[in-house]
Length: 261
Image (cartoon, rainbow, N blue to C red; front, side, top):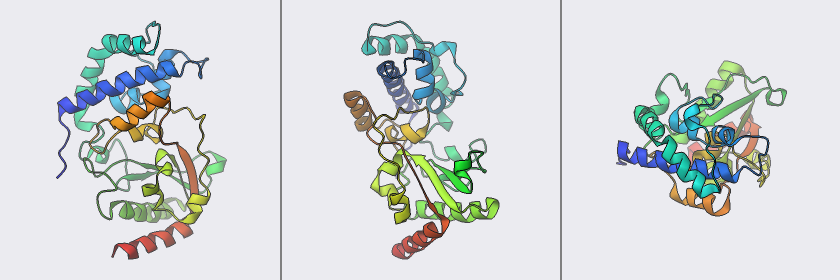
């Protein structure tokens, strides 16, 4: 049985992500000349929303950027200044943090298909008839890929329920997982054919669609992914979008179900 992360482990993770967020924000300055460092931290790292459970669209004075000469100095200065605020927030939300068992089952998160969630219809005309879905980890502290049949059941429920509720005919998402074979195995060839290119100029937003690759199933830091970011100035896996018809997805899920028997 995989052990649940302790508070001490969680706070170590929070410090590591905070430091990485400060460091990376400094690296993005030249690519985002019209945004302040404070706004880059808020809009292009996972610190606000996913680590501190703060709205990413609401600046906080406690996380305002300081003057510094380089990325290392900025990282140290920001951690020294923001540490008490960050640790207090992280401690408060530790029971509801990523990687804790049942964290996505709380009503406020609205996950409706296990580790998957589908949205109500979007206003964007390009998504008309599309079931836009999101991915989390309802099996924490185990991986969604480590629990036999879990994702298959989630996708079956997603297709059934969203079609019944909204009449969707097309499946769509944008995520770093689309850059990994273990995730693509759950989709028909149409999904692979429709994958967007690996955009080397992509700048991450604040969401898990980009940053989930740095979080383990236990809600701790993926150190290899973090090291890759510091060494290369970008995340290892690219956030890619794709879509496929419900018809082809249903056929593929039936195939996977037979394979799993």
